[in-house]
Image 1 (spheres, helix red, strand yellow):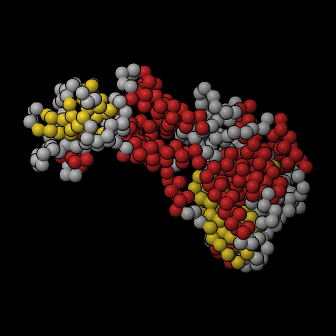
Image 2 (image 1 turned 30 degrees about the horizontal axis):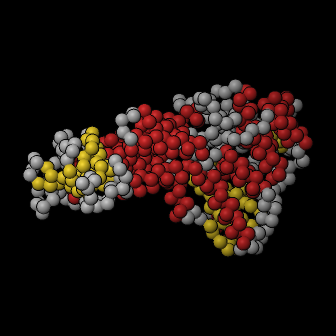
Image 3 (image 1 turned 60 degrees about the vertical axis):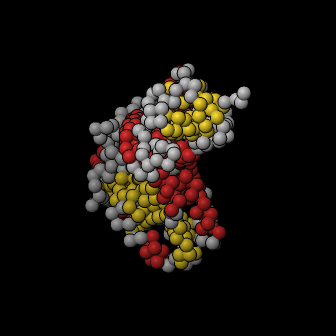
Length: 510
């Protein structure tokens, strides 16, 4: 997860003390009214800025049809904590709606934060709720060790939100705290006269000595000081976190006598955005972009490769920007790098603009995978989650480079032999012949000073026709105009040949 805003430790301590010492006696959560219009809203997949905005829009749609109850059909492992907190605050402000969180399969991390913010929670059988800590796991599966001050800094805004939700919706604050803070232990005990309460480890020892006993059927402890509280549907009901179980959101509405007037599900566009944000999709887009860039570098100005590369780049950057992972400075870094690469393509031979520009592009692409850390960007990542995201970005970019290099090698070797494609890459001999020439012209052809004719517009790249003495016929070559736009039919003279790059200038009439 990424975190943008944090409370100081003293504030959090005050919140915890107030929650534990000044909270009113827990009462049963209010239940949804029977009858009335109900809208079911699905929320699945990653919690991010895009899914947040979609949820806000769906709630407005529910209000527009006159709904008094919303069943939020949850199934998520979480995502960005900033987006989760904004959704949580939004849900707590819906005073004109009764919002029921129906946990379809899982509500983990930011998903648990969203569920706890709703007026009540109902779960499907064997669903899971909990585990919303910023503490991440090491690569061997053990918990990441952080200093107490840093841990408190990261936990504070999440903990404050959970405790507020617990007070508002009559959940035990210690259970809410145990979902966020790994060092919290929870025991469920009852007095000789049947009074039940959740206590931490120190109070547990005192009350057991005073004659209290563990609640029959409950695990001992409910949550230890080395784990995060995560409960299934049976225990969620037992602990008062959930008001019941149901087979589905529709079945819940039927049991409550609620009239469902709309069932808002993720659209094809939502699913497409979710897929485009995945590592696999971004790898594919990166391969397309790099392959198009390779074409532009060797034969610029034709237009098709430029359009394809730009479209792939916009998708590759637009989706992370939409979901909240990419920052504007990362996008700016990429475009500055592209500008430097363009300078090298247009004015070759300087070397450094191309190297620096390419490095900036790769760096910017990698950073679009990395969420912002607590306290803003730093020189080096401080959390394992950030290192993991950085490694994933490096893997995708390195994979994209390797795949595009292989694709370019394969295209150079085999496309000239494939019908139709050999015409696209201009291997046909002019003059009506059916034979094909080699895909790459000899290094000495066309020679500097050779005169040809532009058969397409040069803007500045395009195609020109020259006489090839090795085959005693005229053939095509991809060229770049040194003097800007050249209309078709104009005579051109070769000024420079560097590998596959042929620079020409329009021939002036004597």
